[in-house]
Image 1 (cartoon, chains in turn green, brown):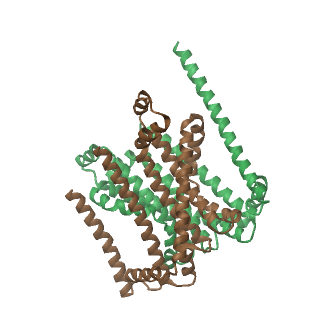
Image 2 (cartoon, one colour):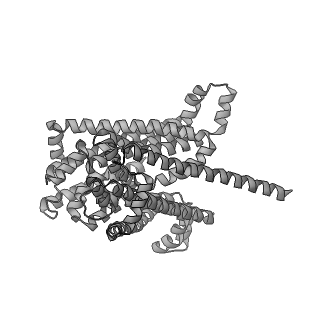
Image 3 (cartoon, one colour):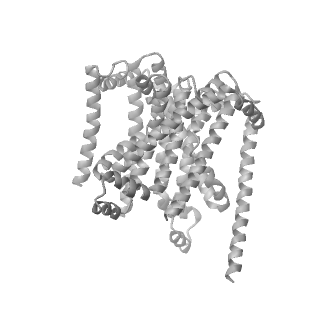
Length: 262
Length: 253
């Protein structure tokens, strides 16, 4: 009896999965069709159609020039993301445990999160000079705050008994963070990492789009300025695909961690 | 209450301290005046620029673009959210799309939009809508999810028409979530439009800042920057306060 019910449930489940896969394929086709429509409607002066872009992209991936720009973006992004993640995590844990400091800091951080930071980019350029460090600083400006806010929220919503327990065991602040707070907040930390990942990438790319000589953002703006439509479309495609892939990976990872800690 | 006041006091003190130390560093030459000008000069420059009237056109341009993008984003996002909420099949499609859309730096579409729509208001509005509408859609979905089934049953028992159900039951119940979506939408529209103007445009406040930067006019640049940031902070602050009032009225009544 229960076997039959289980089997039924499983077949229903797989039927739903099949419908989902079908729908996802339809959506993918729709997006491609829209892309093609825009491409042919504008006769390729703004956006090159999917197939042409793909062919161009394969040629582009074999050029040394592309990898040079991609490496510049990747290096700036990796440094910016690691700095945002580490500093954000530390600040979030501190602000979470020290309630008063946290309450003082949170609205300031939230306010900073919602302002158009791009207007501050000239200041970053004046302070750090043109080049890698300005891009990194701008990436950190975007990625640091969400990481801090997510961690802070996670620590604050922990059952207070955990922190009291750590106090009873006389754990040092460092050990409390490492052994108690970080494991307990892991799902939220992964979410914070995800947001911080995409925002620090955004910061680095915007930095490259405005007065820079290297990187994918520069390549994109440059392609536009030279009316090299396939180039700019290909760069946008690469960035979109990479960021969606990274995000899905982190979503899956976060889901697994949340599952395990339950 | 006293604790809240203490927090507020310390917060203001911290901010004032930061501004004051920046002022001192600039005045004593620890920070090169070619890099950052003293905050008092920034304020003076802002008052000069805005008072002189030379910016009126840019201000009108920028804020009308932002408002247009915000209104469109709220309209499209709410409609799309409500539509998707009605069908679980659409929901299955939309949820992963929305989750990954978040990770795409929407801003990289801006050069393509400029090529597509020409330099002007149109690509800026589209960019603003592209960055703000998904946030509204997500909050509409979660708002509609948060309407408890008991309330809907109540509406059915009272034989309310769909419009009245929406107006009297669904909207008030979903409002807090909706509102937080609107708040995000405003700041995303603002960020998108000003960033677009900054990188590639011929008008607006963002363009004025990048123009001042490129012509080494630091004083003008800092004045404009302060103005844009103040407007952003005030706009967000108003929505924040409004949201708090709504929440308090809810818990009171």
